[in-house]
Length: 210
Image (tube, helix red, strand yellow):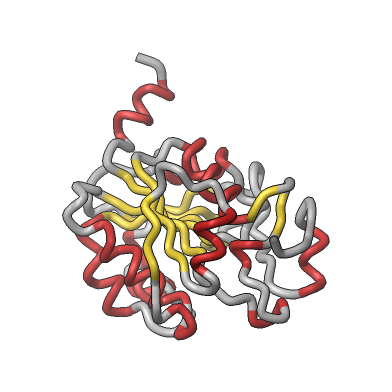
């Protein structure tokens, strides 16, 4: 058995959880999921990264203009999760996403953000490879600084959900459990920039909303 085959076996049961609900307030109200990247909606690209990295299933949390995202993005095979509370911040989307995984048999969730196109399948696969069991906590690191994606073993989901408020996501939970978080260095294969403002749009290959 090759190392890659062994990694895929270990990662069985790890779901990709893509947070794509934001309304793009600092982008003039253009939802990030619908920004164009390589000729397609950014959410479609981000889901494809999770698929290419080897996630067992993919759940995509939608919020702002969810109907438009469903109509315009090719997300066949993904479970689409509506978050009616998306305007309250990333924490609500993380709670909705983790809740959608309950009862699916998923042993861990690999959480990624829709607005980080500089993080490709290579970095995601590295973090995915850190999975051991339901107690696993792991995170990509960039020059030693924790970033995304993050891997949350199912044993941690209740605690993460309880701590996920506003735009903090899993940040406070990971900080409280820092000693248990395995950092996976990814600076050599990815750039963790966000598409947050008009100035960031130049990082996309195609910059308009669809």
